[in-house]
Length: 215
Ligand code: AMP
Image 1: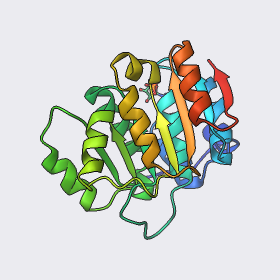
Image 2 (image 1 turned 30 degrees about the vertical axis):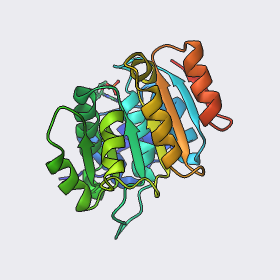
Image 3 (image 1 turned 90 degrees about the horizontal axis):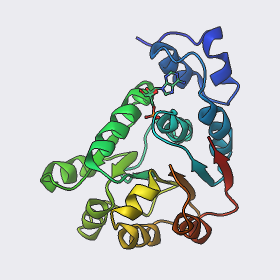
Image 4 (image 1 turned 180 degrees about the horizontal axis):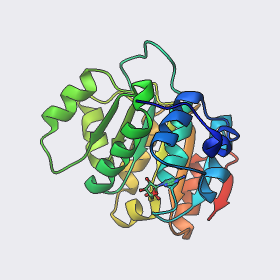
């Protein structure tokens, strides 16, 4: 059951989130936004690109998940995903997709996690049934795209989560290939715990006038 938004999440309301999401957050016991959520949610709802320095545990998953859900169309949605979240590991893919699933349940958001080290068949079947948000490790995303199972033409928001980790793991070429398959009109969001030069380089190549946030 989803309760009505109350005063406790008035501060989430002031960030511009819709009532279904406020109800879900209230049910989850989230009383107020964390600093990164207050800083990023309005910027992302507005549609701007964002470069955020933030570690795990700061509430960054909700910081990018809630604006994506805010933008999700009501009613019939297409088959291809409108958002793609790239993460370094299978564990993070599962964790982020679970969080998304929780936040998106009042809207019936369709989530699929795709990652290596597991047979592709179930992931392909899930993608074929239709999906709003895909959370993926870069290698598997590219593989499923090459097979035609993951279509990236409709991506409106691309999130690179834990970007420094992804680069450390050698995913840069896969990430570049995936970005090239998404529309240039997309919104791009990059989160990283550290901001070495190569993250800055990646950001200046693919983000447009990003809002910079450091928590
Ligand atoms: P993350 O940094 O995204 O891994 O989130 C860390 C933990 O904080 C997760 O267990 C979230 O469920 C929780 N969390 C995120 N935002 C809030 C909030 N505004 N209020 C309470 N808990 C939160």
